[in-house]
Image (tube, rainbow, N blue to C red; front, side, top):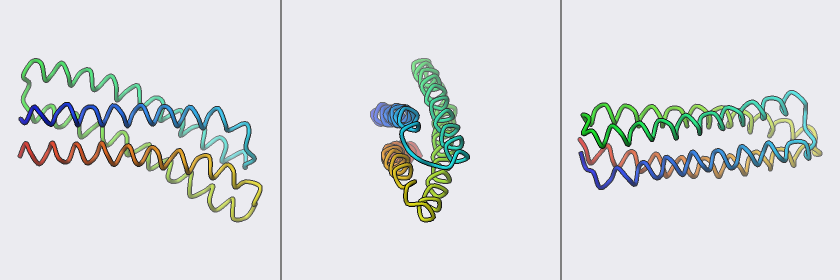
Amino acid sequence: MNSSAVPGAISAIRDCALIMLENASYIQRELPNVEMLEVLRLQTAEVCESMIGTKHDVISELFEIDELLKSKTDWAVVSSRIDRIIEWLWEDISKMHQVVMALLEDSQKNESHTLSLILVQESAANIINAFNCARAAVDALASENK
C-alpha cells in the first residue's frame, strides 16, 4: 500500500462529503424562496435529506477506515471500503442529476420556475466537482496500489 496517497484520497472524500452537506443544506434553506412544482420540491427535499445522511455515513466510514489503516489491515479490505464510499456518493449525485433534469424540463415549460433550476443546478455542479476530485484521488490511489 502506498501510504502517502491514502491521506489525499481520504481528504478528497471528506471534502466531497462536506461540500455535499453544505450544498444540500443550502438548497433546503432556499427551497421555500423559489417557485416550483410541489412534486419537484418534495423530490428535491428528499434528495437533500439523502445527501445529508450520506455525508454522515461517509464520515463514519472514514473513521473506520482510519482505524483499519492503523491496525495494518489488508489493503483489499480498505480499498473495498473506499470503493463503497465512492458508490454511496455517486448514488446521491445520480439522484440529484435526475432532479436537475426534471427541473430543466419544468423551467422550459414555466419560466417562473427557472430560479429553482438555478438553485439546484449550481449546487449540483459544486457537488460533482468535489466528487470528481475525490474520484481522481481514489483512482490515483488504486493505480499506485496495483
